[in-house]
Length: 91
Image 1: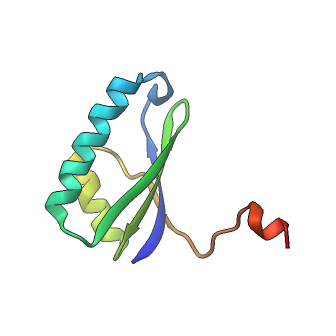
Image 2: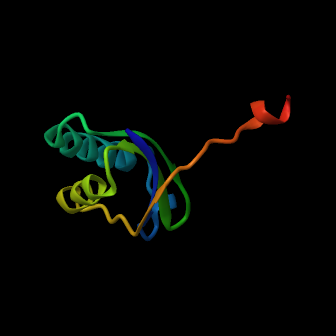
């Protein structure tokens, strides 16, 4: 599967408490289960008005399908070409 960053514009996302975020995560997970094993949510970063979600998926169309079924927007879907982290700087 390929790795993607999904940008979701969700006003006031950063003001959601842990309970609200947990409800959203459970709903998203239920939709993912219904789509089968070709898509997987890894984690999300919550900012003031956006979520940046990291997914594994066979193709971006499957991510769009998840967005439609879950009701969470997928404003931008970007395929990750490579991963760079602090371990690279230590070399």
